[in-house]
Structure formats: structure tokens, C-alpha cells
Length: 189
Length: 93
Image (tube, chains in turn blue, purple):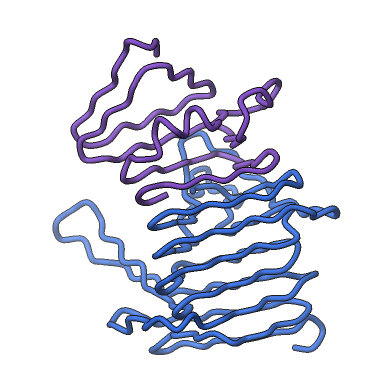
């Protein structure tokens, strides 16, 4: 799914697939808007997949007016649940915000690099290191390890931040290289 | 697309539209479908579609496309789920 905001109107949503990809890329004629927040988050959305990736930082600010944002928002969800058999792979630079609780069950939360190459044959590749944050300002972020073996190949590195009113980290975060993994409770640092 | 129509591509079909009335079939040999719009609304029941702003994907449409290997939904603004929705894709979504 490619959008800056996933919005619920109070219902319960279940999305299941072999692979789920959440990202925020630019489309032609896209007009950027700031992510909304909901004061009445009563919905719930659950993603269930064998593999899942969240990719930030693909927006192109074509008019160079500073309105492009790489962030993703889930609006109106009292609960955002992510259940992945293998790793939840995060890449790019951006923030995933949700109004309520965020529950992640996976083999591991893993960062990945984004490598882009220009169209010319002699163009150099550009590598973007992951700098991602999961933010649940009014809720709890819970991570759980599902017992599956996480692949730990090359190409990792970056930073993952978990920020919420409370954080229960029981999962695994794999972010090798020059990286950091931060867990923040709001107000507590 | 009318009931008798078939849209057949070898690699990928990309549709960027505000309204998609799909009564016919979509066949993609290498199984990739992109649906793009200014906004996308996903709803289980077609009867709830009235006055929705954006490309509406309901259960009837989803049943025609869910087996496609890669389904990409791309919105220039929100992807909105109306009411209770349960969707399963065979491949990548």
C-alpha cells in the first residue's frame, strides 16, 4: 500500500497476504498534506503476512517547496497490529505514527539499506541507511518474538526508534553496522 | 469495462483513475496490478459506496483481483477503510 495515511472510520480491518509492503512514494500530481491525528481512535487494523516491509523516504519534492514528507500515519486506530512470520524489514528515513497501541510480533525488526543508481551506466549508487521511528504518542508499543529464525545477512545498518507512552520490548531488533536502536517512553527519554 | 471485456497484459497493468467500474476480467500473465488514484476507499459492502470520495475498492472488485501476484494500491492522499473490512491477497499487497 502506497500512501501517506491509512485512515480508519472506527471499523476493524484485517489485511492478510504473503507479503505486505507499506510505503509512501510520489505519484504524479501528488499534493502533500500533513498527517492527521484522530482524537477518537476506535478502529483497529491488523496486518498479517509471511514477509512485511515498511519503506520510508521515497517522496520526491518536485516543486522544491519543502512540502514532501516521508512519514506514514495510521489514523483512527486504537490498535495497529503487525504479525509477520519472518522479519519486519524497515528501510528509508521517516516516522510511522499511530493514535493508539502498536503491537509487533515477528522474527525480528530489521533495518535494511536502500540502494539507488542513476539512469546512466556510469552513475554512482547512492545508499540510504535506515533511520526509522515508530511513534504511538498515546499508546503502548509492544514487540514480541514469534520464535522464527530471522535472516541476518549483509546490508543492514541504521537506526530504529520506538517512542510511546509506554514500550514493552520483548522482540528482537537487528540493526547491524553504524547504527542505534532507541526505546523512548514519552517524557521519560 | 463491460462484462464481456477482458484486459490482458503480459507483465503489468497500471490503472490511475478516480472511478473504476470493472465488470469484465483482468488477466496479467506475470501478475502485477497497480491501482492509483487521488484517494482510495476500501469497503466491504458496495452498498456503502455512495458519496465516497476516491477510487472505491469493494468486496466485489477485490474478488476479481485478489489472486494477482502483486497488487499495488497507490493514493495521492489517504487510503481509507470504511467499516469492518477483511481482505486477503494471494501474493504481495
